[in-house]
Image (tube, rainbow, N blue to C red):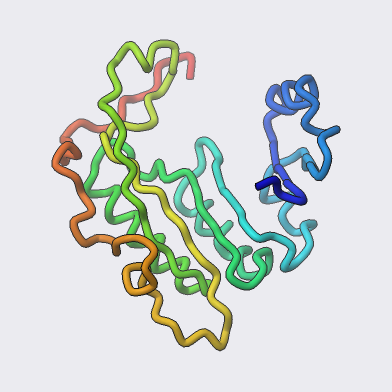
Length: 191
């Protein structure tokens, strides 16, 4: 399916230049908003989005949580929300805790959130060659999907009962996902 419209918020000047080179701004139905999401989001129309994906680099959970506050305004009824789930990417225990906190925070904003386990292969060091900071360590990625619930919705916020995905945290951590004692590496002097 081809979406009728696609809005992109991008702050990095180099990415904006590359997007212009590739013709993103001239594509039918595409709107590129240059700037930080914190500065752009209030200009977006209410109840205008069927789906929103949040993927930003070097932001904390508090930033994601701040973004979540806007979802009930932005999404249409039964709209979808997902985000790059790189929370605590070096420790599966803390990652699971963040996932559970995200579920509760999203529920506070009227969104029912489940996670789908996506099996990845073990990434070798060579695959991270040239990457300054490795941003994923586990062999399983937990893809979040939150669905906006209407105010009169009496359905339980349980993806398993709805027939969508298995509930979190029931058997969420895979055998290959070990609790690591290794901390996130400190950035080098050039980072």
